[in-house]
Length: 386
Ligand SMILES: [Zn+2]
Image (cartoon, rainbow, N blue to C red; front, side, top):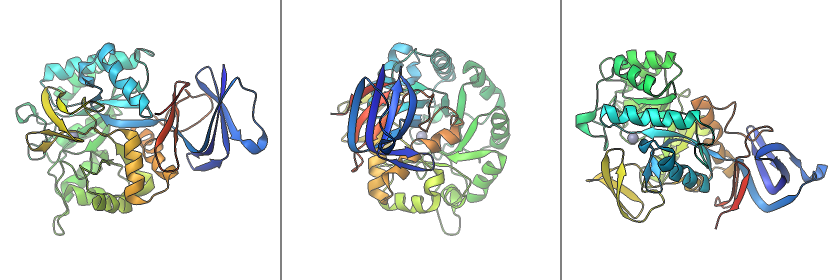
């Protein structure tokens, strides 16, 4: 089966292609080109005039969706999450754990590792690796992570997690100012784990020490992080200042006010910004009470809280792209890379994800010129949105 997509523009890693066609055969990208060269033979044709074709997105920080938490760890429960993510343009993701009893984390890591190792175990978005968020976080900046379950950084405990995950932990959030944190950062980095600094009360100097030890990214910048004071710039100052550091941001307009998003954008720019959702099980569900890891969260009108603390989000990646473009005025093709090429580069999955290339799974999405998701094609399955 050969299906052809045609659109207004196609996003490439280093530019765009006008009047593109893209040929999909048996769920795989066969080839792409421009209309001027003529259209290849095909059975089925989806024309999306004016639309921007982009690779499907990669969310490196997502806890759940559609009533389920990834820590449930079974194919049945995680399938609800992966199908929902795919319907919002996400082709792959890093299922993200939260601070929980150690046994619960071990069980979740084992279950998620099995899903990662079993192609086809879930439909929709593909779990590529695990983001371990907690338990090595600061009490002062724990957000909703339960205080009694936070742990001091420990190579021994990390090694238990690493074994349970069978080497599939790809990203770990750590507060670098905690005792022994830098040893853990060096240890995990040597195993290929990307370190994201966050949930941290680090001073600027402590954050820089975290970078020197191996830190390569920052977790939900601004949120759960010491702010910028002009005499003690804090972790936030260090993150905005360091051109080498990737930085996640939650662009729902609730976690970070648009002016702060624009300041972030001027500092981190197109090469280092990573859009994430931090989405939890309530994403895509009506207002109510939901689970985030082992605790409960109330959701009302786009805001997820535990007591009076923001707890994850109900943002979707397509809305993140739309919002970020609206907040910053950045071109849509540029913003699309913040949700595709950049997270792929940080997480080490760029050889297989985050760009449109012949031979890869046909994970392609289309945005209207206004930044609305209008179609998804995940594993070659085409669907119009709305
Ligand atoms: Zn967090």
